[in-house]
Image 1 (spheres, rainbow, N blue to C red):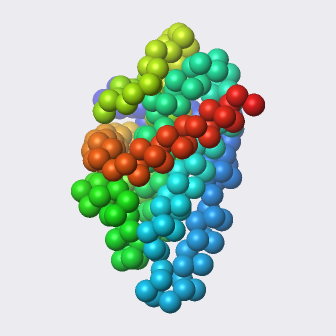
Image 2 (image 1 turned 60 degrees about the vertical axis):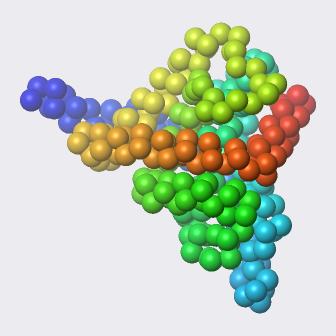
Length: 248
């Protein structure tokens, strides 16, 4: 009971700095996630005759651009930029599959793109049907709170996670892994306090528990997607473009 009371009283303990950080994260995501690009793409496709909509090549280019747009959010993150170039690139290579996949699935849900049969079929061709099943599962499990999802992306972006598949020529050692701990703690604490503030302890726990199940589904989707050469080409392209930007 005492613990419960403490947690209840903790619901409004987001500091001014945390509110500012939260606002900046949401703004950065909305600014760089390419909403205008997505809306323009859908509008252009809907103007075409039904048989010509969401063709494979156009959907492939759409996914590549969408994933790249999502990655821009992290390139401009001041905490990410405070790391050494080696650590930025190492972190990028180890998390880009997760951040770009979760961000893309979030966009797919927002715009109900899987409701278009031809878009769904093109996605199956690009990533294989088994991957598309996992993506659909994540869409169904993804939390309805958009701000929570954007916070989760920030946590994942600074996660020192292991690979679920082997990739050649990938450095996995950070210069100093302890440098990541303050960022991991900061974004996790911010996310938890946001949930407490908005939903209370019981609902916050439920949402975090559901998130874990959702991340397992994301991992499954990525593992399946690696069977598709197109997916690895997309990821390699994002890494190459981002590394070029970071070297400027």
